[in-house]
Length: 332
Image 1 (tube, rainbow, N blue to C red):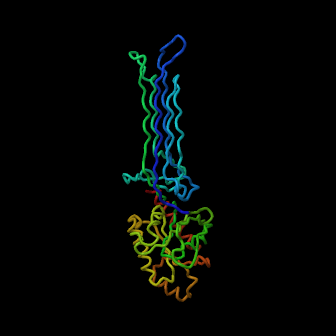
Image 2: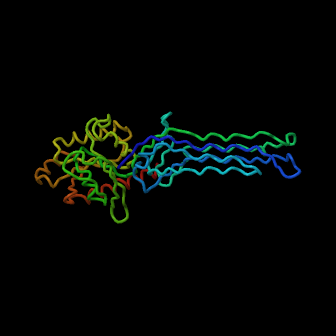
């Protein structure tokens, strides 16, 4: 099951209390203070794991409590610190504070690691408070409380190329034909209910991660259809590919609808590099396709993923756009 948003509660461990004790032995009724310090409370740490693609592990468990530190012991023995808890999340996970609404962390690289709640410090034992004027202190510190937060974990897929289109435009077929991904494909709208990722080879030495986003409809940015909950997954992409069925009654209007929904959701997407691909060209006569192409911009790409028509040109265009984007980023 694909899960890209969960709310959890996390509580770090409290520190152990310091100990009040005194050295005792035969014929020495009251020796010096020897109470040890309490151990530190355990922290909870989030780690971005490249092997994970969903927040499914958090579906049933929403509360996480780290162990407390142990209290200090006699003979200056410190208490044992609590063992930290590691929460593994997919790379691309954003961590938000539910109370303030602030984004605390963005784990956008595999291996990224952050302490999301810190364990409390252990209290000092009475040995710490011994001074020249107070040789037998009868005081010790309590351990500090660990941090506690209510958090939202939100996954945004890490893909360089995002396929966006109306339902049944052929996005899943493109992904399946260009990569080893095997999304569900059928001839009816909303076949794709979750985003799919695939690694696409472009030439001999280049590859990219391509995402197939569930179909958008007019009003998706306002929550209509299936698109709203998945629009966030195209925010990290470097290249948008608008996918339009050649049998669409009004191709320019379909293209306008797609772009307007993306820009309404995130205005920065207006400046994102893009390609427009007309699909399923094997389903129309060559004369009809010529008539269609004459009414559209010259840079549109025409393909049939099923018949492998135009796919090489499509992949080459992706390669050129990504190369140009890399060059632009290097000069910024």
